[in-house]
Structures are given as structure tokens and as C-alpha cells.
Image (cartoon, rainbow, N blue to C red; front, side, top):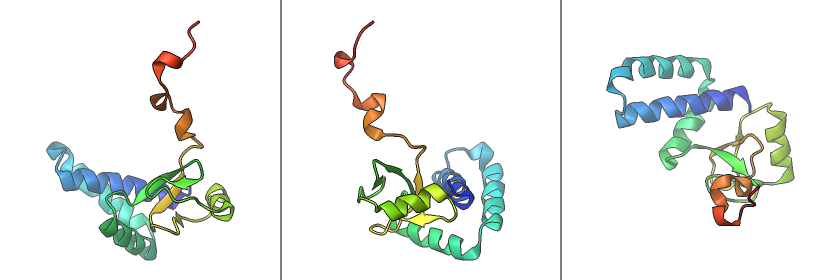
Length: 122
């Protein structure tokens, strides 16, 4: 994952917690984290993040099975290769969200999607 995408994810999480007032005791700490993260990111990237954030509740999503985790649009091999290179932040060409390779996880392989009655017993 590109370092700027990781910073955007941290920024989005901190801003979401602040917006929902979930942790009143930690508001100052999150506000300081938001400020620090905003100072580390380039202005053009922050502007793009703000634009996407106004359009989507989840402006930064993972890629699962070669599709955008937000709109589920299939991604091209070239875009997937750009994600793997981690040289820049990438956007879904369909919905415009920031995308990142979600640890190479295969969503279908996740245990949550399997019926426990069909699993093999030792």
C-alpha cells in the first residue's frame, strides 16, 4: 500500500470518529492526529480526498477479487499492477474512490463466507 494511501486511511478513521463523537475523552487526541496527518499529505491529494469524501461515506476501499470494494467494478490489469507497485495513490475509474490492495485477501476465502456445517471435521 502506498504510504499516502495509508495516511489517508488513518485520516479518514480519525475524522470519522471525530464526526460521530464516539470518543469524547479522546477528541483532542484525534483532533491532533487529524491535524498532523493533514500536514503530512500533499494539498492536491487532500483536495481529492475531500471531494471523494463528500460523495461517498467510504472514500477509501480495498480491492477484493480484482474489483473495487466500494462499487464492485472490475479493475484492469494495469490498474492492479499500479496498486502492486505502490508508487502512487490509485482511484477506481468507475466510482472515484481511493483504492488499495487489501492484503491480497480473497473475500470468498474468508471464513465468514463459509457454512460451518460444510467444513471438514478432524
